[in-house]
Length: 362
Image (cartoon, rainbow, N blue to C red; front, top):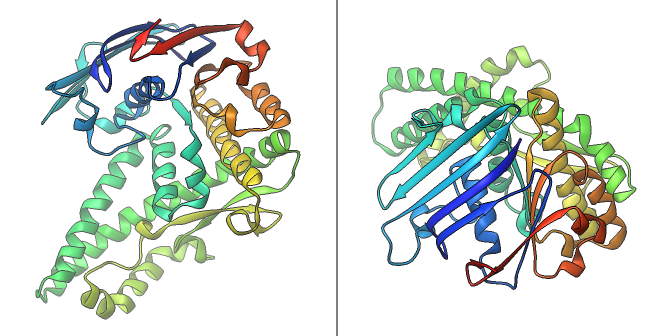
């Protein structure tokens, strides 16, 4: 899978942009603030229908304009697909091969993109919410049903919290709500646990190859992971919710569920967030991303696209070379840099170089 072309209109600092990419290595070079990351952001948006930097799509619209448009052609095996996205201040339309997308979950499986950026370290060091968002986005890319289940769960969670904040004392309503809440929660638990098991198929070997350090793994932290007999999860979760009810009624917040999930990086059984060096932590997150790619390759039989935002400046020479071994072979890679001297000469030899200045290709 690879991007063949990209057209932007009124997106960030681009009034009009037309780019073509080769199927292997593409290097976007320019000083800071010229629009390099904006290009990666638009490609990420094509895959996930959201920015990786902000939550308000209207901020993506070029100043003083009323909409933005993104158009791209993507090669998937023997198919050449076209995606068109039109975003106004109050509406968005997405077209895949001229057909308007109605179900976002089904679309999210179509284009597999993995992004590396300096802030990815927050997956390890940041809040549990960041790790849950990573996990959700990763599962969206391989399982369209997960998107629908998660949406249903979030709707039920909102309804339950609203009930807890109200003065209603309707036990029949609460029991019915809890029944569906628990059903969706268990599906999410199981999908997340299964995905983390998939990560652990690959992450230790990848980390060893990049960092020359063994025994990295991911550990799932959830109510589900505390239950030894998974057949008892439904009964255990219902019991826990009943035990928490008085406290929940006081706070107006549902205490137990997938919205509290987390995962940790363990290196030789020690929490890398607490005991690891900055280099070890960064290597773990990079390994996580490559494990995500291996999952897509193994379970979807698709080679994903890598977007790398100034990643090489964060690595020393040895680890940079080890990283290159992964991306030089079969992936399309679109990366940004402020300085070509930071990039391997071998990589530059086979690359398409795109120079950007003030939102223009020079």
